[in-house]
Image (cartoon, rainbow, N blue to C red; front, side, top):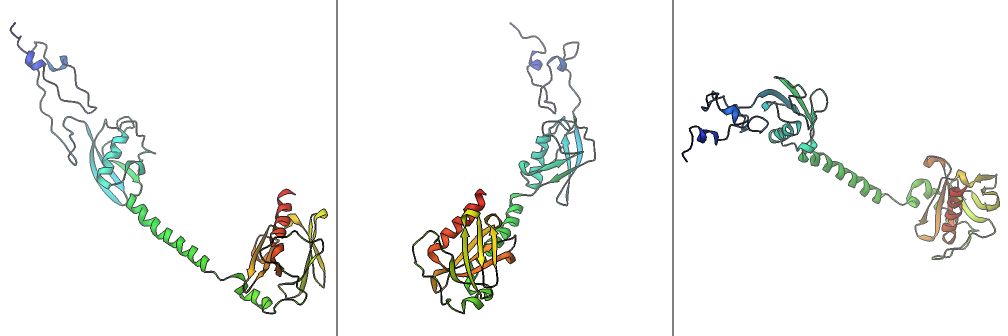
Length: 280
């Protein structure tokens, strides 16, 4: 029942290696059965790491013009190196791009990707505080732009339109019915001004899929498909009439403006022109 010599020594755990795995018990004994003691290895640490007995490699970590001299376990993975970089820089691992001969693989060890002493590890990324510092002014600028747009004066107050509207209603303006939507009449819409202050009439030729814009000088026959958009706005002080523009090209310079459109026909004009443009 007496314990044999050496049993107590066998029960002690051996120091863990770099990968965290313990050595075999047989490796801890000499052929004669006596405990073999390895000479003590120097413990090298960086930032409080438990690196005793590990094979270390010296690295130069470079991030945001800052350089860090780091001693790190050669058998640690790229993911573990990211954690170390996090402790040094405050940069979360998910926001790090770590470069060593390309993007550093997280699942491989430094030994596997042949990292050697003095290797430079480049880190790209911004901390959460840096991101917030950049985005906050940008968001504020966007809000200012929106506020300016909201303050933008109505179309009817702009100089180019005032010179027409200040002439007042045409003598032969068509009656308006506020708060009512009507279909387009079978006769042309007349009694309106164009941007030159000349009289203009609109004729919708549905069977030909055309809008005819007629003035005293000529009549332009526009295919519905050539009209990209229709914009309108009530005339201030005369909300039962609208000013309206037909977009004939890519810019505002291509808008054909018509003034004193009876409000009851505004929606019908848009539906007719844009509806035809969508289907043909």
